[in-house]
Image (cartoon, rainbow, N blue to C red; front, side, top):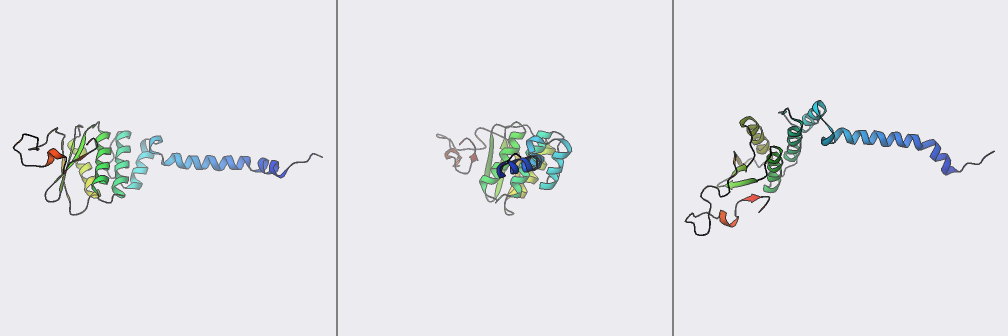
Length: 172
């Protein structure tokens, strides 16, 4: 009679079970991986995280889901709100994104992306849920290199924007 070690016995008895468990775990992770989901599965994930408007394009929906997750966990800081804005701007082809704070408590969001009015309204609503209740989200506007009345050396405009004060963007 052939002798079998305990190690061999465990390997024979549990190899298939371990593979089945590993496969089940991988399937679970894949089910929640936004990059692997499309259509109704993607919409189901969106519903779970609180997305209420569903664009037809899966890539846009992925951006909305990512931004909604950011809004859900936002601490209301400038950086967390900017990260949400950058995600949405890039989803629509934006390469330049800026958040401008205005006195007393207002934020204006700028992008070089083309965003329809209906999508902009959804994004504004999403951003409003991410900021403090005392802060007003003024809306989305086209990105401008200089802004309105921005200070430049040799300019007579009395703002401090020329020094980067009050402007936050990913390339400053």
